[in-house]
Image (cartoon, rainbow, N blue to C red; front, side):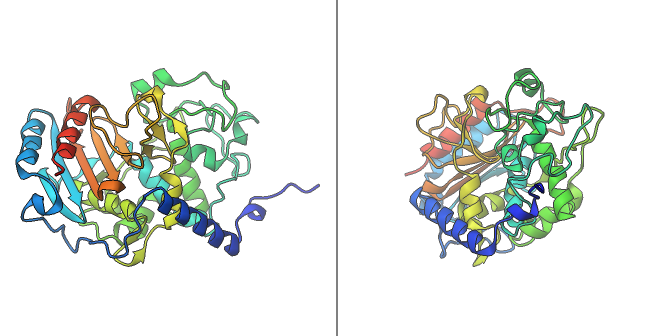
Length: 365
């Protein structure tokens, strides 16, 4: 029998429509907003004259800046109802995303999954994916979807790993594909390889054309990205620098389920899908994980962020040394926290960030 190819598994347009309707319903039921009348920034963010008009206490928000000044925090932005309720620091400074890059990759995948360019059920074998030390037949059974969920079971050496990631990495061949969650840079990096292989597009160019330009990012350019290569793996990492104010736009796009000022930039069903809970993330001291997004869930053993209590349905993009983009649909709020990691020694711990976020959330009236 002829082996079933990738193309034969690509969803037909009618199925895509049904899939979109299904996940739109899921998003509505879960409380994620689909606000056709949402307020969006123009060429620059509109800053509220008084945070009280957006439901936050100015007096309490002033405490945020005082505390941030004792840390290595570079910038903070709080967006409510599409306006800046509070900002502190260098919101126009381009800073390394670190692992925040992964949430951008997951979001960017949506267009190409929905139009059939990328098949989420394609395996590493189907896509001719391999690596320096060679992948086994079992490892090549991992699918694109497994990688999006950080469940590939491929524990080959990877690039751009932190010390903590290496220490937590399971033994090679210890878990079959799809059965175990581990925050795995191999998965995240191979998704970059697959994206460029299947779309024939450079990641940074696609990010600019598909997301940054449609939502009017003020600062990001494809040249702000760079590929990290090395001997351990052929699959490159793809960090980039971005400002707090541009990162806030991305968060506002996500909160509005991919819609920007009347244009559907990212399919709403894809936004719903990637920000749902799939895996317990206690291993990393966090509540849960979606498709390259960290997801809050009430009945897990760890909080979404230390000290700060957020409602279920909250999700965030997180990067090393203090990079955070938190989306809180229930509050119609986006919070950005940046640390300039280009300066040696600059870092803000999760605990310290949690204290800052707690002050922000406590400022709600």
